[in-house]
Image (cartoon, rainbow, N blue to C red; front, top):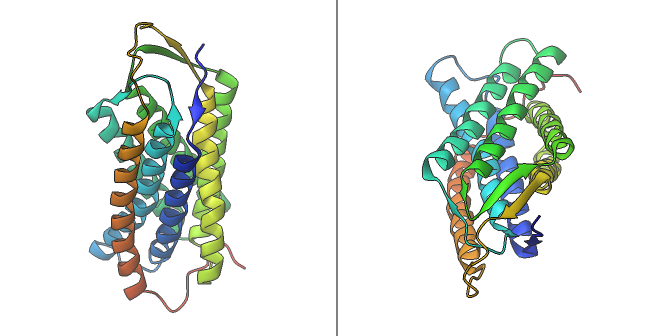
Length: 246
């Protein structure tokens, strides 16, 4: 079984994008409860799910590239796109379930479970997109733990999205959400067990390509999230909607 190393800088970058996406997403999601049915509702659900789901996806891929697997790794484009769509779509489903209609604990848990399973599906679909000279298997207890963390993080995120009034509160919560998302991801990475199949790998392999790709993903995500932040700031409600009381 292969040992892997982590690039600490990329780990921090992955956390940073998770925090930024969480903060922007929280500021967008608070429009959902009061949005008018139709175009207005679709607009805010789409933007908030792109912010949160897209940031989770970006964090995931930067996080994967933070792992130096001691071999060249490429990614299947089709599965990569599917993994991104899974994150965005399941976050959108959770936002609609929890953010619309009469609030209830059952809706929070149901929406959180669906969203968490979607995030976990995104993660492991992304892992399946990896193309390398190694076979991959999983440590089942750690795999299950990563799914539990994903569900818990999703429930917390959905509760926070509709129960915070202050900007400072949402800012602090974004750091907590970032930790939860990264916790799920790196637990999933720890569950991965790889065995190299090609022992004639080129000795001039470096991890530089992964670093440059991570920077590109970070910059692209930061630009998109910044634009969404501007939209959120220009359309800020006077007071966020509380879905579950004080």
